[in-house]
Every structure is written in C-alpha cells, then in structure tokens.
Amino acid sequence: MQQLWIGLGLLTLSGRMSASTTSDIVQDLTMTPYGMIALAIFVIAYLLVMLEERIHLAKSKPVLIAAGLIWLLIAVAYRGTGMEQLAEAAVRHNLLEFAELMLFLLVAMTYINAMEERRLFEWLREKLITSGLGLRSLFWLTGTLAFCISPIADNLTTALLMCAVVMAVGGNNVRFIGPACINIVVAANAGGAFSPFGDITTLMVWQKGLIPFSGFFVLFIPAVVNFVIPAAIMSLTLPNDHPEATSQRIELKRGAWRIVSLFLLTVATAVSFHTFFHLPPAVGMMFGLGYLKMFSYYLVQSLPQSLTKKRRVYEQKGDVEAMRRLGEVVPFNVFNNVARAEWDTLLFFYGVVLCVGGLGFMGYLTIASEILYVDFGPTFANITVGILSAMVDNIPIMFAVLTMLPEMSEGQWLLVTLTAGVGGSLLSIGSAAGVAVMGQARGKYTFMGHLKWSWAIALGYAASILVHLWLNHHLFSVAAGGVGVFTGAQ
Image 1 (tube, rainbow, N blue to C red):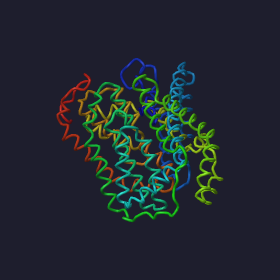
Image 2 (cartoon, rainbow, N blue to C red):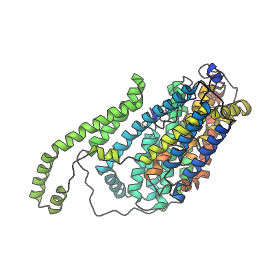
Image 3 (cartoon, one colour):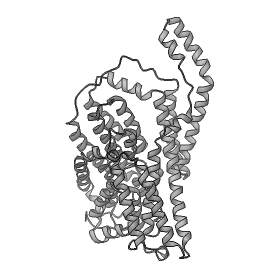
Image 4 (tube, rainbow, N blue to C red):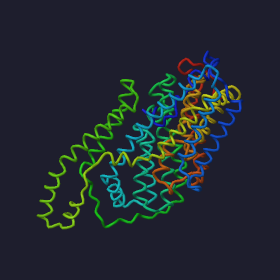
C-alpha cells in the first residue's frame, strides 16, 4: 500500500544501475562539474533542513531551490547532445511520482484534520487522562498502538494519528512530547518493517518476488526489539506526572465516529485498489476522499434538523450553556480541512523527490550500490543501507539494490528490508513519519531533539540486526526467488 506513501521510490533509476543497454545511453555525470555541483547543492540544502529550528527557515524552501538547480544542471549537461528527451522523460516521471504522493498524503491529512475538527483527539485526551494513567504509561500506550497499527495501515498515517493524541495529552510539556514523538516514529517504522503493506521497502521486495507474503513475519521479533530498547531507555527520563484534567466536558461533534469509519474504509480501499486491481493506491485514497465529501454534504444538509432536535432537549433540561453552544455551531466544510494540510511537508517531499531523482539520474546511487555490494559484501552493505536511509531515504536506496539484484540469500533480503525500514528512525528526517511529525509537532519535536536520542535508537537498530541474524540464521543459506545465494551471513 505504501509504495506511493513517500514517493521517493522508483525515480528514474530503472535499468541504469545494471549493465544494460540504457547504461550506454544515459550519461554518467558523477565525475563532471555538473554532478559535483549538484551533489554539493543537495548537501547544503539538507544541512539547512537540519538547522530548521535554529535558523527558522521552513524545510521546504532549501530543497525546492536545490531541486530546481539540480535539474537545471542536468538540462544544461544534456543540451546539444541529442538526448534531451531522456532528461525530460526522467523529470516528468519524478513529477508523476510526486503527484501520486501528494494526493495520497493530502487525503490522509484531510481525514486527520476532519477528526480533529470533530474534537475526536480532545475527546480521546480526556479519556486517557480520566483513565488514571501517568505520562510514562501514556508514553508506552501510544508507542505500542503505533507499532500495532502501522503494519495494517502504514507508518506515516499511524505516526500522524498518534502524534495528534500525544499533542493533545501533553499540552506544553516538552519533556514528554519530545520523547513521545520520537517513540512514535521509531515504533511506527519498526511496526511497518515486518508487514508487506507496512513500509515501501517491504512492499518493493515482496513485489519483486524475492520474499513470499508470509516470509516477512519472521521480522516481527527483531522489529519489537528495535522499538522496545530505545523506548525503555527514554521512558526512564520521563516525568511520571499525571496530566491535569480540565473541568470542561468534551462533547464529540456529530459524525465523528462515522468519519473514523470512513477513514478506515478509505485505507482498505487504497489497499484493495493496489492489491486486487493493480491500481495506484493514490486512486483509492482519492476515492476515499469522495466518501468524506459525500458525508460532509449529508452533515450540512441535515444540520438544521439536528440543531432543532438538540434545542428541544436542552430547553427541557434548562441547559442555558448548551443552548449557547448550539448558536456557535459552524457547518462542516471539508475544504477547510484540505486547506489545513501540512503544505510545508508536502512541498518538502516534492523537493526531495526531485533532488534524489536528479542525483540518481546522474549515477550517484549506482556508484554507492556497486561499492557496497561488490567491495564490502552483503551483510555490511545491508546494514549500511539502513544507516544511509536515515540521511537520504530508504526508497531510492532500496530501489537501487533491487535493480542491481545482487546474489543474496533470503535472510540477506530480509536483513536489508529490516534495516531500510527501521534505519530511517536514526534521524528525524530519515523517514516520512519523522518528517510529518516534525511538521505536526513543530517546535516540540525537532531534528536536534531527535538527535539527542539517536544513540539509544542506534542500540535498538544494532540489537534488531543481531536478533535477526540469530533467530533466522537458517535463511542465510537459502536462495531467494532464484536470485542467487551468498552462503552464510557474510
């Protein structure tokens, strides 16, 4: 389902990373001034993204500039060669990928905003507070829910939902919100690593036919280890306070639970469109937006009748305050929820898609993949893939690996699936979940705040790899999909 979730995948690398005829057509610009300048531009842009909270420059701005400059360099390099159409086709493909990504994310964000407008998260906050749980218990509860939900839905949507709950519960308590958001990002990424639909990397490996559908479930225990270790360390530093309950009673607005049901139906629709009909998940998500728009029409048309019924009830009870609230009711407007989407995050993804796509078109990902797998061996390479995914993104890296198809055992393919899925948790910008949560918890969950706990996340990353090598050692000598075998955990 999540193949278009982040949209950095598939890019323009198909066929260029192997010894094919296209490699004789596409120019290798890695050692030219064009390529070196493009790489420098990308590095500078990402440094500015990392410094966002210090220099107060929105993360979308540097990558938008970098994307335009990188493709301008490519266009200049191809000018007069008679192959200008290759660069044009490549950038159009990137634009298509982003369009599908944006539509997918826009629908998810719209539903989340609609649930927030219906006071669902305020209501949930009150329920959690009245449950008597302290901040540490809430920290574990939200993390566990993120881990359990992401394999079914996806890590990005899960992270956004649970972050909204954390923000509602934590208020202005930065000591709680920061670690809780980190925990959610780690848990959501770990939960998606053992399900074919939980993360783009698992989906790509499954679609390639290297691992059967049920084969991914052997990564469950390593994924749990990846989540639990940093969570246990961070929980020790949390205040064990109990959130203060407000005297105000939170009343859900009409249709709140029906919107939740429509959202789950939308997710199921997107999965079904892709799984059974081989259509892009974004088409299913936009279909699901139609559910919400039709329901919003019903809410608006039936509002007068609903207000009349409630007014009669409140008049009989003599509830003056409730009568006053009825006079403040505003009709549900789905377009208000669309407008409240995190546009800086969406534009950031556009910049990253174009930047990474341009660098891949120049040949940089080819060089990195060949050095890793040919010179250092699969185990080292697959572990490094996870570390690199924290800085670049797991999708173009995984696609480079799948295009090269190095001879690896099933255990090694599972290893690279695990590391690429959870490695993005090492940095806040390493995964779509982290980037989205940064936008949602702006100022409270930051790049530097996440970096302070990277050492604990790295412990979980290393431990999950060791657990996989130990529990699934028998898979390191079994060929996967007829691709070939490297004997043992080399």
